[in-house]
Length: 277
Image (cartoon, rainbow, N blue to C red; front, side):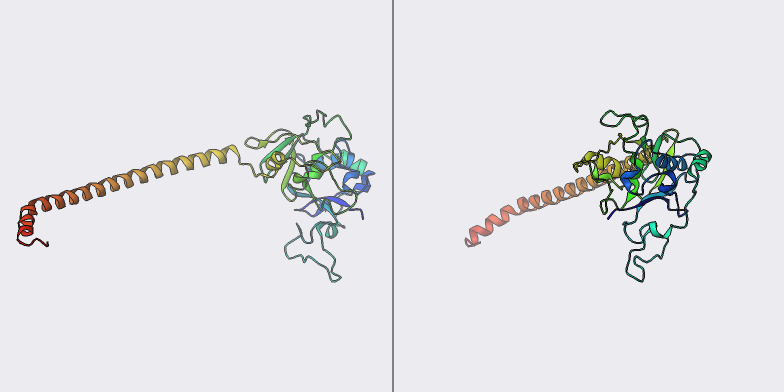
């Protein structure tokens, strides 16, 4: 069966409804760059938008039970059906008049930003295939695919390249900024293409890794530097201790040899008197 999706602000439990924008509910019925429904979500996540810097998920109705739901939500209802975020927010639709709603939204940002992982993606750049995202209407938009939950469990889901990063931003704090945030890593554009399922491990590592800010990196370098100095001092003290111990042992061995040499005449005389010694 087909799987339906809502883009949901996890913090406020709100969503917007694709049918209000003349779009289908299935993931690949609306996940494109110039799609008005996706653009509405982009604007909600932009500065001055109601969802700016919110925990966010493009939630499927086959997603895991209780995932991203309020604390204490059971995974199953009394009839043993999954209780999903998709199902519990049904009454919290943001707006029904799409035209009027879009007019109230701020200008859309250009940098899809993950504040949890400190990563941003320039939506104005060309993808790996050289297609300009902001000019090609049927180019797949990365926001729904990176943040979706439940993909692969129903009809209309995405199947194509870069499957390893589909959904890897679900539940993270997301926004679409006007410029790159200092200290955040600018990742390479991703060109999602439906068809044969292929994966790109470097792309997975790039999008799944929690990147550190420049400030965090500098702090870690300073910490490592201090640790290196501490380790060097410790090693020096240990070397000095070992040298003293070696010197002590050398003195002991020398004294032993002196004692033996001093007693050698007596030992030789005893051997003469007692040949068996």
